[in-house]
Structures are given as structure tokens and as C-alpha cells.
Image (cartoon, rainbow, N blue to C red; front, side, top):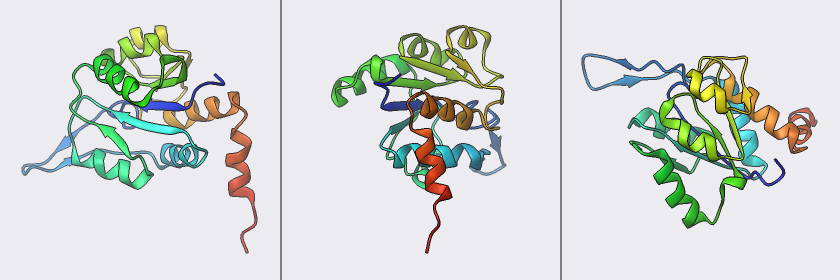
Length: 170
């Protein structure tokens, strides 16, 4: 765990509950959990590289990534393993540096290789089989926060998050 410095997040079913709401126009709606967001922001502030990789394309994802301070996000990715390995080569990272949080079959190939894999409680059975941690929470309901908290505790960084919120501001 000590070498993990990059965390890849799936969106639909992991950061969200997996539902996609479409109206009669061209508007799409997704629901994100602010508790997940708080821990994502905290991890970024600690120097972790958080990257979104998702199979769908959505302006909502770009907006949420910007709100959280996630600078890299890749949408419409059909082959996540191929895309990730190309990115890993460019960024000079290895699977040994990588944590991956996902929920469905299109995340499976990467999760099998990542140093650490985590998933929500409602993930596909095959994803659960390869996960190091299965959250007690469903996707979009705090699973990302729980998994990131576990990672930060394992790396000895979680106390820094708590301290940052416990410090008295003058």
C-alpha cells in the first residue's frame, strides 16, 4: 500500500448510484454524494493523483471533476485497461502505484492488476471477487469515502485529514 499514489475512479455505479436521468431535452442528471467528494478533495490536498476514467460521456462528470479539483478525467473509454496502460506509460506509473475503485465488468481487467482494488457493496459479483475491499455502502452512497478512508489509514495519512478539519482557524 505504501507505494500507492494514484487513484482511479469509475463514475457510474461508483461515484454515483449508477442511475442516469434523461429529460425530454438533452439534459442528463446524476447524483453525487458530498461525503465521497470531501474525501476525494482531502486526498488531492495530501498529494494523491485522483483520475476519473468512465465509459460514458457526460458534461455532468466534467463539472463534478472540476468542483472536486480533479484535473484529469477520461470519458467515453471503452477499453479501460488499454487506456490506463497508455496513460501509465506517459505518467511513468505502474500497477504497483495504483488503486482502482470500480463496480462493473468494464472495470474488471484493471482491478485485477491494480495494487489495490475497491468496490461498492452493489458491485458486480465478479468485481467483488477481485476487490481488496468491498464497501458496506452502495455506489453513490459513501462507498468512495469509505474506501479512500481505508486507503489513507493504511498509508498513515488519514490523521492528516482529520487534523485539517480539527484545527482552529483564526
